[in-house]
Image (cartoon, rainbow, N blue to C red; front, top):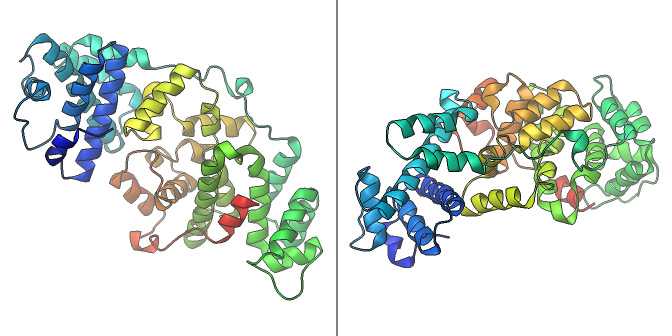
Length: 396
């Protein structure tokens, strides 16, 4: 929901500033809902939030009075001050969140900082309390308590074999031969329009020979991950995972920072924590949905409501499944690469960027950091795109 059409000419012209105003509006609505403000108050708050950094001024109306109170703390009537204080609080939270990457501030310190400013009189402490009361420790427990797709022992064993540095075409054939479904997909792809020649293949060894080592390993890895991530409800997640995995593999191959096959595996499961969120209580899910619909990125909303994000949850799941520790570390930090020295965390961050993921606020600092850690120039990455096999795997 944007401002009313009569305010369109007053909107900030800078896209980054407009997106900031939308996030402030979404946060403001969450606080207003928690405080049981009226529908009319919420409408005024929304428009004033969208326009709170506008260079122009409203000629009249309740929004104008709220914006005047916003610019002069303590001014205005009591109802106007309440809405102005909410905007001021939301504006400060958003600015602090955006600066946290550069300053290295833990996100857990953002609300205590807002309390300190409440003591300075910038807003009532009760408004910060309302933000804190919106947060939840969900999902409760740990991975053994969460309703997750099963990752059986045979899949884990195959995954371990795929991570073996000594893996070759012969051992890859042995790995694929342990699962008829995987073997069938390899033969199916070898005979598809992407690889088909005049002579169809009918054996696993011939299929792997036609596909090549890297493609065959990719099909095996995707076949392992598909039961976890692919369903009508999670199709978008599955496609994003395949695209990220493909780009991560290309980056690893180009930089030598990690084994390409392992980078592909890590890319496939990097967002596995998103599945945990499907089991959230209704009220937590509704709060997340409201913030995201209002313009807050997924990770931004998760950190406010749940005090952790799907990357942290995904790392816990990876550890529970006994995936390699460095893979769990990369999953945990793929939105916060500055907290990790793992090349794979930086590969995943770039893969997210190159697939146009909007799961968190864009960060020039993090982008440059990831490029530097991988010894890449930005122009070396912009031509990378997911291969044609992604669409085949998504539909297979």
